[in-house]
Length: 280
Image (tube, one colour):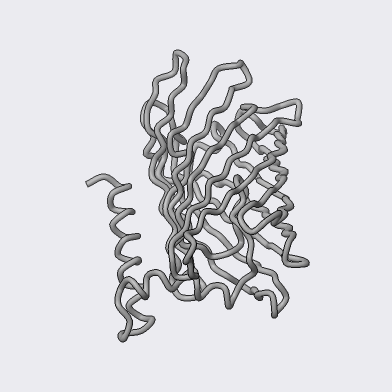
């Protein structure tokens, strides 16, 4: 049995086991759909950024597609774009599973599947609109080097991060994160990196959100030692809810944007991202 299948089974086991602790009097469906609703009592009303991590705990599925150009002008397409499934556990944890994306190079490089990842979030402190409208969260991801034909990392890696967000006037959000990537081996070849994201969001109408992100990565060791790449990423979101929607009903979000390189050094540019999200 492959490692990413084992990981998926563990996540699904957590999905089943977690809600059972909530209430024996509710049906499984009611318990399962209650997580996002219950989180409104603990955290601000924001929307998950296009690229940067979200400080909130959210239960979701993401279907994503990205189309970027390397520094040499070659088109690279990712079907999956390192997005997946997130499940809320209790009122402190979120567990994510990110299946391998399929990467199409449109060059001499061999197409194939990328790496598998898991992520755990821990909500350190937060408040809803009546209690400060903020959130501070710790994250730890683990990337499993399952990529084929050099479409992934050379070794597994860990990615710790801290994320914080604040909502003001119930219409504008600011979110910032600081994290890193730490390979478990072959450091001289792969190097390490530090990622810093900062963004602002605006809730324009009941269904429409806009944002502008700044995504910066600083490289240490490896072939990019001492270099930094920076992107400005404008994005837009459209929320689709049925007419009789209530907080326990699933809903859709369609979103998209483009990462535009603003640094002299960049490994890719004009990365067009399109997504459909299902929140439940």
